[in-house]
Length: 467
Ligand code: UD1
Ligand code: MG
Image 1 (cartoon, helix red, strand yellow):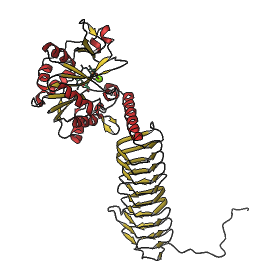
Image 2 (cartoon, rainbow, N blue to C red; image 1 turned 90 degrees about the vertical axis):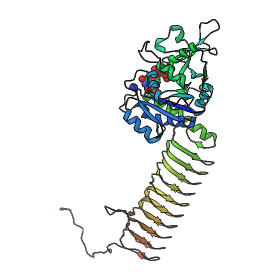
Image 3 (cartoon, rainbow, N blue to C red; image 1 turned 30 degrees about the horizontal axis):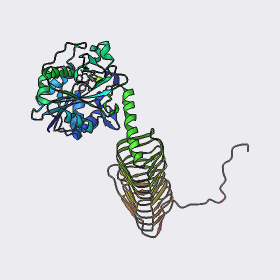
Image 4 (cartoon, helix red, strand yellow; image 1 turned 120 degrees about the horizontal axis):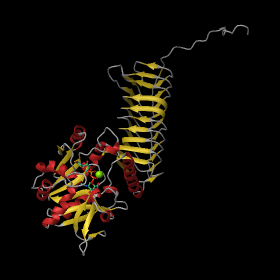
C-alpha cells in the first residue's frame, strides 16, 4: 500500500539553547532528522514531506543532502501540530491511501513499529502509537471509553480522544497512556480533518490530536499500537535528553555487538557513529569511537582511546591505545600504535608495524614493513620488509604539487632521513642515517648524503674566566 510520510520539523527547540535548529543536532554522528528520514525510507515511504520553520534554510539543505527525493514545505508562523500538517495537505497524494506522521525530534523510532502502525491503519482507520509512562506530564493523554461511559485509565477500551496535558482535567492527568506524536491516518480523511481544526484550547494552537475526536464522531475506527519501549518514542528537547538518548542508543548497539560475541571492556564507554562490523573474537578496550563504516576482522584488538573512521582492520591486527585511523586499511597481524596516525589512503599489508608518533598518508606498505618511531610516510609505495628509521620523512610536497616516493623491498632507511620526492630507492638499498636523499638510490648499495665527520686535533674547549 502506497504511503505518504509527513515529518514535523518546524519547532524551535527553545530548550536546546542553541543556534542550530533542534532537528540538526546529532545523535550517533547523524542529525536527528537524518535518523527520522532513514526510518521513513525503511518503513517504505513512497513520498516524504518535511515541515520546516525555525532554521528552515539549514533544515532544507540538510534534507536535500541526505534525502533529495523528500519535499520540504514551510510553516510560518508555527501555529501547532495540526497547522503543520495543514501545510503538507497540497503535497499529500490521495492515491497513497495512508499517511504516517513522524516527529523530527523523535529519532529512534523503529521502522518495524512504524510499519505495524501503517498496517493497523490499513488505509481506513486512525492508528495512534501510544506508550505508557510512569510520569506522563506534558504529554497528550489517551482517553478511552469505559463500559460505564466515563474516562478510563486502564486502556483496552475504545479511544475517544487525545487530551493535551494543558487542557486535561485532574482525572485525565492521572492517565499514563500517552500519545507519542506518531500516527497513521487515511490520507483523504486526514486532509479533511486537519483543514477543519480550530484553535479553541489552552494554547491557542491547532492541535493535530483533535482529529481523534473527529474520527470518533464520524464513526471511523481509532486503533492504537504500543511502542516496543520508551526509547524509540523519546523526544529530544534539551541537551540532557539528547545525551540520555545517545547513551541508550549506544548501549543498545553495544549489547547487540556483545551478543554477537564482541568483547567490550565497558559498554558504557563505547561509541559507534555509523556502522561497525566485527568478526569473531574481537576485543575493544574503553573509550573507542567508531565513525563511518568500520570493519574489524577476526581476533582484532583495539586498545583504549582509539578513534577509527571508515577503516578496515584485518584479522589478528592489534591497534594499541590512542591511535587515530581514518580512511585506511590495516593488514592481518599488523601492530599499530600506540599514538599512531593513519590517514586516508594508508594501506598496510600483513604484519606491518607502525609505532608511536608515526603518520602514514596515501601510502602502501607491503608485508612486514616497519616504521616504528616518529616518522612520516606520505604518497609513498613501500616494499616488503622495509625498515624505516626514527625521524625519517618523505618530503612529498614542493609547495604546489605532491610527489611519490618509491621504496623497494628490503630497503633500510636510517634515522633522521629526508627523502625528497619524486624519488626511488632500489631493492635492498641502505640509506645512511641523517641523509637528505634527493637523487634515486641504487639497489643493494649504501647511499649517504651528509657532511663527513671531521676531528680537529688539539682543539681547546673555551673556559670560563677564573677557572
Ligand atoms: C505533541 C502532541 C502530544 C504528544 C507529544 C509527544 C499535539 C497537539 N500534541 O505535543 O499529544 O503527547 O507531542 O511528544 O500534537 N511542530 C511543528 N509546527 C508547530 C508545532 C510543532 O512542526 O507549529 C513540530 C515540532 O517541531 C515537533 C512536533 O511537531 O517535532 C511536536 O511538537 P511539540 O510542540 O513538541 O508538541 P508537544 O506539545 O510535545
Ligand atoms: Mg514535544
